[in-house]
Image (cartoon, rainbow, N blue to C red):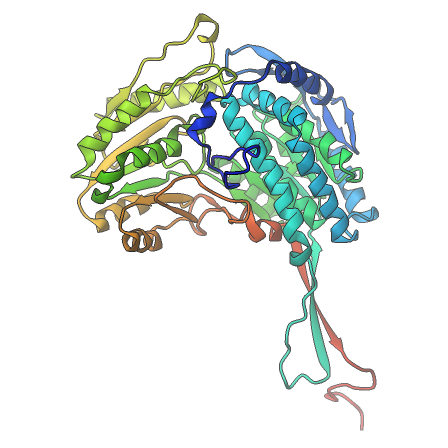
Length: 545
């Protein structure tokens, strides 16, 4: 998903980044500050303290140039246990879960305010861009959503956590009921590398608002901003153990076998696991939780379609921009990317021509430099996967449309992939069916509305789709038939803190929600209490006469 910048009050707080912000470059003082933050915080955060890991350190390679620029802690099994035990103490013996919700609200507000200070925001944006390769302006958008998310849950938590008193019916004169909303417990949150801090905040903010204690484990490919989150939460007043941050593999393996992430999800003291990532890793989360009958929230992948009807011909400028937003921002590494473009056959030639003009205007390069619209993918492995999918598409008869990269010498060892459009693909081709997770747009044409809906729904995934038409009745009719958790009408990738995000149940994009009230309810447990309104009364079923 894409984000909005918090520094411009005229913009709505949504996950959409205006092209205007591509002109921003990282301030020199922020780059220096970022190094200070990394040196201070790139350790384990347990009990509100930064500590070294028994498992040693892991190098961090920047995708910008392929060179190491930092390292992170490699948490061992005992390190993981220390973090979980800390969270368990906080939840079971501290006042955190019993604390009045308003006290937690104030902590969330202070975290949001800290994220909006230029000193903190700019330094974290530099770290994010160096760590995962996204342009500085996109990182600013992510930080804005992080602050907005903490503020949103501060706003809605008091009402959501309130005890309610449902009607029990006119005949139940001797009873009344209440439904208490309680924090669920200790939660293990495992997050991905494409939106490192933002994806962590989408879990941490509602969990803290509910009164849960969290052990956060970000991806080793981009952990650094998550490491820094620990000190922000502690400085805002959260008690020791409310948020613990551990780093490590997989895929990195500890001495003697095993990985940090596996030790976390196997831990018996977790009450829930919340995961965002690939489908194969999601299966491992479920396997670890199955024997414990432990609730598990999964936000997985997608292969979203963007349907364009013939009446879009009069608004191609805006349409092309939304299509490009849907696939090229974050270098296409977005679970909800609208990576399949379905075009009405009467518009195909004209729209493809305009898209090719558009990709020629994308400046690919150093994400910290002014004017960069697209950075590298996150790792060499991801680069090789994406390039391999493009090559396979060509071998299968597809046509490749891209522009050769023109990178300066100092960036040529970075993990760059040119923005690419694939046409002439068979419905059965891997590039049409499988999630590529890179800046690759696959296109097909259709003749009828029914055919477009069939092609869009012909996927195991169910995360998101988009539809474009000047006919609002048509967009609404088509949206109702698309089998996904999110549908965009005449836009793409726009979400708000108040709108739930998650895959359609029964599809391969997972289950559970982030954002919205639904995202907060992932971290609560409802308790029904039935009260007899007086003593000296019973139903008399077994009463001795």
